[in-house]
Each structure stands twice: as structure tokens, then as C-alpha cells.
Image (cartoon, rainbow, N blue to C red):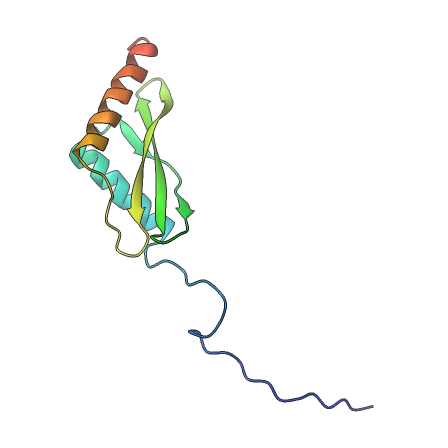
Length: 112
């Protein structure tokens, strides 16, 4: 038995209903956040695994953990947003100051 199927066209990439992958990968976003932290905050903060926030301006949310030698990770002190299309870290001086103060409070609480 032979079945006849109607001809169909495969949609082009721009016509497909699938969302496009961001230009910046999670790995790249984590690298950019790590560099920003090292240059603007402290080497004691570690960028953790990013999660993608979809929306009007898709961004990677990168949690920052305070780490200390001999103690390991003490906890999260904030997050950085990295634009998923351009790779720009979306943080200002107020964000840097807030995370610095949060890291100091967390270190004091840990008895350091």
C-alpha cells in the first residue's frame, strides 16, 4: 500500500516559531561576570551558574558567592545581569557598593 502525502515546505529560520539562541552563552556570561567582579569588587567573589531571563531585554542572571580559603563558599551576596545579546554587564556604582557591603556583612557573620 502506498500513501501519498501532500508536499510541505520547511520554514526558514526567520519564519520558525522557535526562539533564537542568545548571542552570549551561559559560559561567556559567567566569564564576563567573573572579570567584572575581579576588576570592580574582589577576587573573593565567585560567579556561579547563570540562568537566562527572557523578556524584552534577555539577560543572564549570574549569582555571586563569597568564598574564603579554608571555608569555601559562605553564601550569595548578589547577582550580576549580563545582556544576552551584547555581553555588557548591567551594573552601576550603586550595585557594586551594595554587593561590597553585603560581602562584608556576610564575612563578619561567618566570624572572619
